[in-house]
Image (tube, rainbow, N blue to C red; front, side):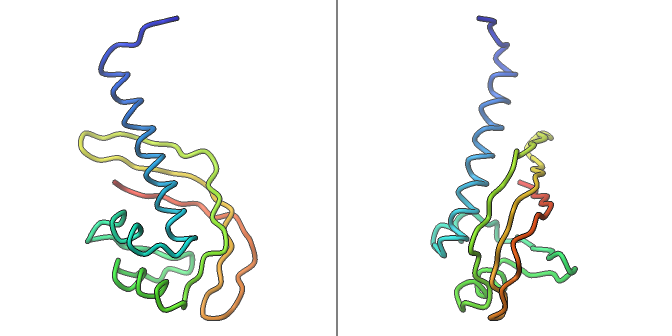
Length: 116
């Protein structure tokens, strides 16, 4: 087995940790677990929807709490992670099914880009 240099091993561990956090965030949103979702969204979080609307953390989680947005499923594909010093960018496609404002939005594939 080939040994990895310490910096590379640390980067790989950090990358996997970020993927795990993102999957936990998605599970919390689908489960409606707002306590976990609140802890996994930064105070300055912004969601840009597929139609170009922008929601703050409070608007987004408030819409979920009120039942205006209800995720039925959110299944991410492979999550690519790019580390940049203290920041990271995650990019992936996901199959998403949501009920928005009482209307079922058919299951579809969407691109996601998240910065941590």
